[in-house]
Image 1 (cartoon, helix red, strand yellow):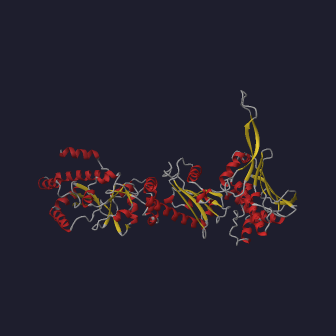
Image 2: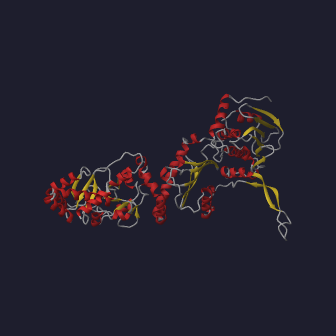
Image 3: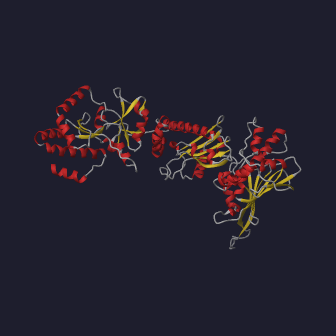
Amino acid sequence: MALKEFKAESKRLMDLMINSIYTHKEIFLRELISNASDAIDKLYYQTLQNGDTGLDRGDFAITITQNKDTRTLTVSDNGVGMTQEELDNNLGVIAKSGSLQFKKENEQKEEIDIIGQFGVGFYSAFMVAEKVTVESRAYGSEEAWRWQSSGLDGYEITPCEKEGHGTVITLELKPDTEEEKYSEFLEQYRITSLVKKYSDYIRYPIRMELQKSRLKEGTGTEGKDPEYESYFEWETLNSMTPIWKKSRSEVKDEELNAFYKEKFFDWQDPLKVIRTSTEGAATYSALLFIPKSAPMDYYTREYEKGLQLYASGVLIMEKCGDLLPDCFSFVKGLVDSQDLSLNISREMLQHDRQLKLIAGRLEKKITSELLTMRNNDREHYEEFFKNFGLQLKYGMYDNYGAKKEELKDLVLFYSSTEKKPVTLEEYVSRMKEDQQVIYYGCGETVERILQLPQAEAIGEKGYEMLCLTDNVDEFALRVLGKYAEKEFRNISADDLQLQSEEEKKETEKLASDNKELLDYMKEGLEGKVKEVRISGRLKKHPVCISTDGMISTEMEKVLNAMPAQEKVKAQRVLEINGEHPVFEKLQELYAKDKEKVKLYAEILYDQALLIEGLSIEDPVAFSQKICEIM
């Protein structure tokens, strides 16, 4: 038969597919095995439909052989095979899938699960082969046909001899180059590892004759040196039954833990295992794991999130980031769906509607499981939160709070009264009748927050305070805005709503009587503060810094620490304790030595900054001022 040309559009598609669609050349073996599995599926379903009981699923197999001398790799099956016409139609037109056509013709049958539905997978063979030969005999036919092609030039179909039904695909590998070592695909270790990686859960046995070594009989005993001999043995390379397809009663916890450690390279058992499967708009099975501790690179740019993505048991993506929102990037695991086309590029996969449906459902499932763990297994939840709570809080703040409602009940903050991490729900449930807001303080450590001057009045009132020690904490609460209709209030804010009306009047009168002194101190600080005022919150401490406006001192520290970030400044207020001996001294100095008041104001301002955890502009000058008043 004369050489037939591929159609023009097929030529362009083949060139694009070979050079662009597949990221790794090793994918070709996955594609050929998947096609072989489809061919067996088609025959199996045909025999069921026709009532042919002469074939059993256990009779089917996929066979791989390699020959280093001829540089050939062969993948064969005893599936449905192809007629001359089918060879011409299926292999002569790229992106025309026989599997897709078969599924359309039998779309009423729910049990049919055909992997390859896109129609370009076979041509991935040309990424590694300079010539591809397909010998096929259709089930029930006496004739066999050979399809042969060296790539873009075209193909020819001729009669051939073949025993039994099925298809044999033989690849003549390209010569090795400095950049590419195609002969690696003739090594048995490489083939077995690729089958394990991509096709371990194909439902039919993938068999290969492996070269092994054994001790020669009569050696290695009675003083004789051990001698070894090589022999060949047929072996099934794939496990065939995915662990996530087995019922819960069939799988022990130890098996799941072992699967996780082997598959995701962790030395510890997972903290939690999540199994879920659905049918309908998005049909899939998922096996998810929450690690016991965060990987070393988790909070770095190098960390790559994502779940393994399978299409009917065939791995199509090692890390599919689109299946997980950033807030749950710590989750490891896999998703297996029958609704995804196997032969599909990463770019197309990102826009797959089914993928988005699955991702949305997985997110809800993970949220639900974490809430259940929080409610029923608090010890393990707190262990989880130590490792990944920061990610949840970033998730609340990220993207203008898009996930804040989903995450608000998952975050924990240390409580000043309970002396342990608590939820926002737990805090609100303990609020006193007269308490209108949720109080929080910010600092590097819980101890430093509890020692802040502003915390005195909160404790005296018997109110609970949340201690925020991570940089993102206050930003997350600001984005959340309210919880159970209660606003959040930083203890360093200007109005904490702590004073009674009588106490407010006393503070206002003291401020009015000393207005000139307070204005003079503000003037002496030369624009460093918006205002100097009498405090209604201080008890033992003489002074503190509060803020007026949206930016707190903690937010100022965090934002100004970011590289290439425009510097921001909180509107600071210096609060003076009107009942402290220091204030009496200021009144006395204002009457006798005004210049000294400026010196005291500068010292008190720097002192307040240090208490707040902020750096002072000139430590040497501060030291000199201390010495001067001493």
